[in-house]
Length: 376
Image 1 (cartoon, rainbow, N blue to C red):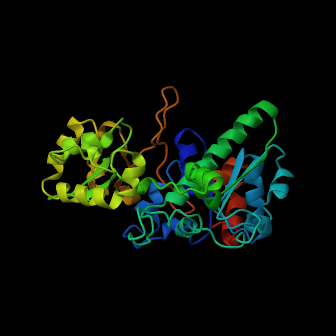
Image 2: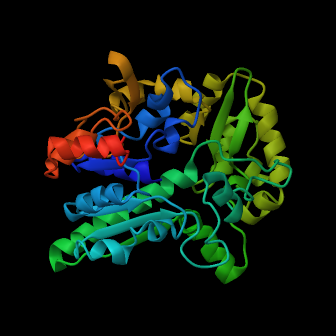
Image 3: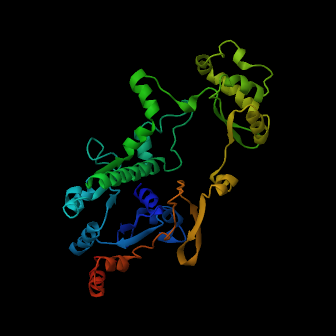
């Protein structure tokens, strides 16, 4: 959450100093076994354009380094469980005493109050708590984990948005403020349309259960079809799938309500037709009827897709020991202030001396801090 938010800012010019634990660093440095250890692709993917300073925040001199950094900062971002920053002495009141116009931004799992505030926030846990994991095409589909970090990334982007809004407000008023986001709220907010229907009509809206849409195996893969956004999509589906009749003329299938009631029948008919030929064959048939459709791709296939290349979504940057790594580019295109890659992801503590010099620390003082372990 925190690294993705701050990398987005760093890509567009923000100077980001990452304060890490001596000897260990960011958790993503060790999240998977990899030949590059703490400089593995997972860490590199969300930490370019940053500098790393390792500080022992339990020591008085280490804490002083943090305070000196805060005095020069516009924004302090944290990604701890609720209350940790306050226990460390880096809460909003603590830091605004040093820098009154500071923007203090925090991302947590559940917020600062309430029955779950004490719990550790994690992507899969947030999926489970907020209904995201529960909602699926139908009850026959097993409950499962969404296989990418949906909650972390979404909340990270909300954190980024909050920071930008606070910077805009400070430019107008001169005042800093707190920015707080959490995964629980972000996942509920992602379901704003469904929640509005549930709250006001006691009606469950499930986009995965649309009767004319779905994912259907073919002879050599699978096709995703969306039967919507047309006056009579079932009539066009009937032509595309070569049923030899207009299914929308069958009794009970001429209305959205009737199609929903007969979803099992329609889905079985679609599955049977798609299984009779290849993915490419059915894509051509569906597109001829102007029906939304796509082949179901693996990530490997998507990364190699010509559209990915045209959109410049894969970029190269320096990696460990003189290597080159390929990672995803920012998805935001700015005509006047485009994103840039000024730094590779930092090695743990790579910029300790450099940053301290910028703060006015002498070489002797830096050596003393290193010797006593305040920085390492």
